[in-house]
Amino acid sequence: MMIDENDIEAFRDIINESSNIVIFTGAGISTESGIPDFRSPGGLWTKFKPINFSEFISSEEVRIESWNRKFSIDLEISEAKPNKGHKAISILVSEGRAKAVITQNIDNLHQDSGVPANKVIELHGNTTYAKCLTCEERYEINIIKEEFLKTNIPPSCNKCGGIIKTATISFGQSMPEKEMIEAQNVTLACDLFIAIGSSLQVYPAAGFPVLAKRNGSKLVILNREGTELDGYADLVINYEIGEFMDKVFNISN
Image (tube, rainbow, N blue to C red; front, top):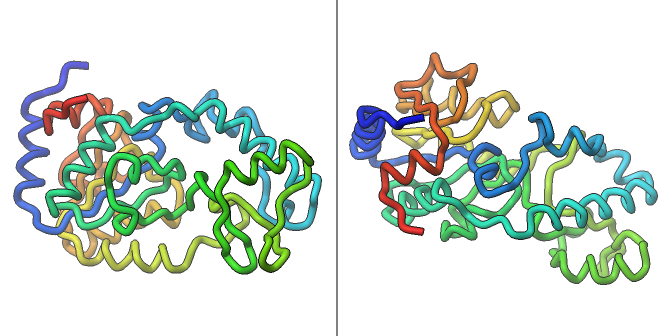
């Protein structure tokens, strides 16, 4: 689809008029890096039935299955790199215009693109490392993988003996309180909220654009397809994210 110059100018104008921008990202920004989303045809949930958190906790067999899935999926997405959408967001953060990035994604691509980790609020966690569910000790995935492939025994914490799990939020697992509070605070402080690559259907995360708008912020939605919240937005842009952002920011590879 040919990108309309009016959309580019409208996007630039609303950014230039703002001093406290919050970015909110969903799976759509990372599919352009080759990472499949969960819900679409061919997505991860069409290949694997989601594992409930309670099942993970109660069953060693389920934990073995979960880790096998993790390493299988990693083989598919190991070459994923930040795309021009991620790089555009990194530019906004580095220039001080975007104060925070709230993301539903678990792929670490915002950090890989240059956004400082303390500027990224991960509502659904991060799949690039693991944590003990009891004491929260961090474990690197490569170390867990090496041992698991030798023994086929799910990992347990060296410090407290607790169950180790990827640092992601599973079905049935509570949303991270600290991150939810932080996301709410930056949303209430912003004067422009830009939702990128999200269907805006997964709550409570999808409530943040509405919260921003009701608090007086302008709202921009950039997504390949329409969303149920388009009617709330001051500006709706429907293009491929990386292609559009490249036109706006003239991003070099």
